[in-house]
Length: 514
Ligand code: SF4
Ligand code: SF4
Image (cartoon, rainbow, N blue to C red; front, side):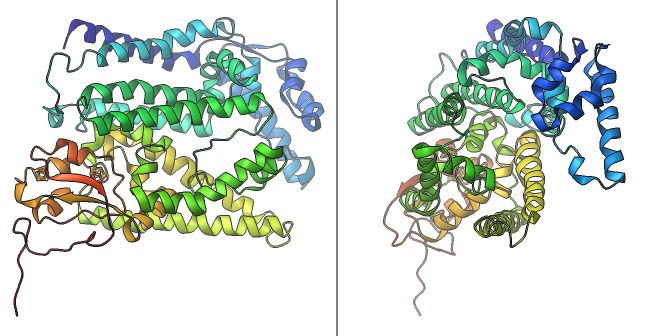
């Protein structure tokens, strides 16, 4: 390791330590004006009454502030519930906005300084480590020693990284009030882009985008000389930064609904929820454009582009989840399970999620157009279950937190309902396939090892069989790591695309004459 890279590692560790410690520094003080400013008009009076014992007190940590807040807030709500005064119960969760507004620590005074010391140092350290990688070496993908790496082969570094990611996602989804200092750091950027304060989702989008950008640069170094990988990586970096991060914030600046134009239902599972439909319908021509484009993408875009190019057009070139998997997750792609058992679980699981999403959406739309006479608010329960189990737990906690344990495409392979839809089209009606020049295969197994979707590519290559699998995201890494040029990602005529050849014997197989 060059000395510049060693400095990079040290800076990254320092940045991460500061990022981890920041939520625990600073003081908290609440007053009436702040309480009224962050609560809805209908709750202001009650919230002032509930929280008045906290006014003026200085809390030395967020834990003591939040526990005090919850004590007063829950006592009020529980009493109403006991008396069955349901209309007076405050269902909104004010823990995050109140804690954020009550912060009086150093982060509030110098948000950009702390942003530079935490995320900024991590990015700088990452760049110092990444940019010298493979310099003065010939093009060619090097995975030397990967199975001896503590970080990339489920060693202690990998375990710590995975656990850290899992904990971060749990706090982000269910306890954001504990990371208000981190959100305060990005407030100035949020004000600049959207004119409003940052939420935990803005912080997440910020970190997510920079993770893709920095690790995308690592992809440029690692896969130099392979144009497919370079262009594909540029594409996911572009779509994340522009479509998923900057553009939605600019929409908010112009009083339009936050909208990621490239996010397609059923991955974007709330697209047909009442508040989203109302938001789009009430936003004039642009809102109607969002609605019509969203529906066109589902009905025409997905089948057409998948017919022409396979699911790779979305999963490996456009999607944010795929973008993170292909950049931040690339060091873990070899950890995917290649067993037939996994393949079976994958098919049951991913199609079950698709069915769940379709049924939930069908009921939601029907209920919406029947003015909620069909199921009343019952669809809200379904939304909560899906949002918790699939949207947060599966896609977030497991989807990313499990990179160092189960590879980088856990969500895309086992859970994403859009991947299931794209996969059905790819399997049964597409021009995409990976062709194999079986006579050249030396059975080294590189392709299977680095297939992030757990496809046993070698099995197909050995018998000269085209690879037509619904799960293949067309990342092209199997082809890139093959030392014999056996594999080629192609779009061609449908005829002869699926060529089952049961006997292993070069390109021509064996023809039995009876
Ligand atoms: S088969 Fe090849 S292109 Fe398809 S997902 Fe696996 S590595 Fe990527
Ligand atoms: S990487 Fe190439 S040579 Fe090695 S098993 Fe796969 S197809 Fe065969």
